[in-house]
Image: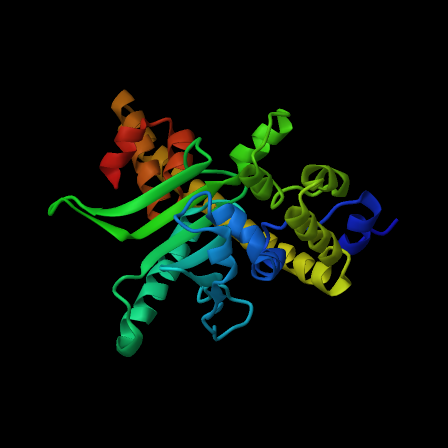
Length: 303
């Protein structure tokens, strides 16, 4: 039997596209500012009403290739004294963190170049909606910029990480959720029945849920999401292949050196050589520690 396309799978299984995915995130956030207000008023000195009066603009920096996202800015919202860059992160990677840093800096740079309209009282903030994993075991993490040498904090520049997985864990543990937490969980749930039960009685969240389900029944949107998954899988497979080749090369080089020296210290040196080769090829520190058995502080000395 031929494998069902994603569209048929979703309809058959009563599932939706997770709203944390780019395919839906931009639509949901821009079309439901009252919903966004529920989230932002809990983490910033903004009210839901102020957010609803806000304006989205410059949602994308044009790229030379429509399939490349590296030059695109997810969402920018001007609300009150705040200019916000909203980022949906399915899962956190070094590449993604660097991309988001570029987006945030680009937003500020654009304003700085517009000398006539530059407002020095604007507060710039990047809000990261993190899906599968998180930086710390906290629901909300706020980062501000601080110059250690001058001991000066730049309060107008900040980043907020919303670790949706924390709220989802609370949901699955059947703990009582606040409205803010329900709004976050809504971005991750995939089963229609669970979504309906989560938002029951909350008119704003019910409208968002209705749109999530409606968009997940639109073939054009689902097909675009399926194409995005395929592209992502190819990218991840390519990365895994590069790591595998780097591992083989590092192992061969390190083993050869260890055999030549024929001493116990040669084994330790082989691990170090292997770690160097890993790092040289962009392998993450976590994988290097696991693969070589070296301590994290030993790896730090090689950086």
